Length: 44
Image (cartoon, rainbow, N blue to C red; front, top):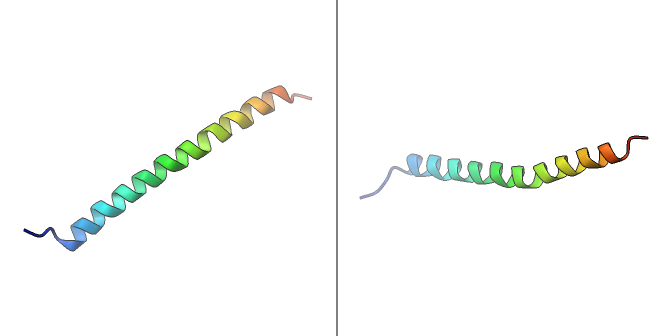
């Protein structure tokens, strides 16, 4: 029993997109927090 290639591709792309968003959040959020903390420290 084969799944439709289009359905498989859609599932694959949705998983890749979800992983990409998660990875992007993991990379961006600490940088933003660090930048905010640095900005609070450097109130000159």
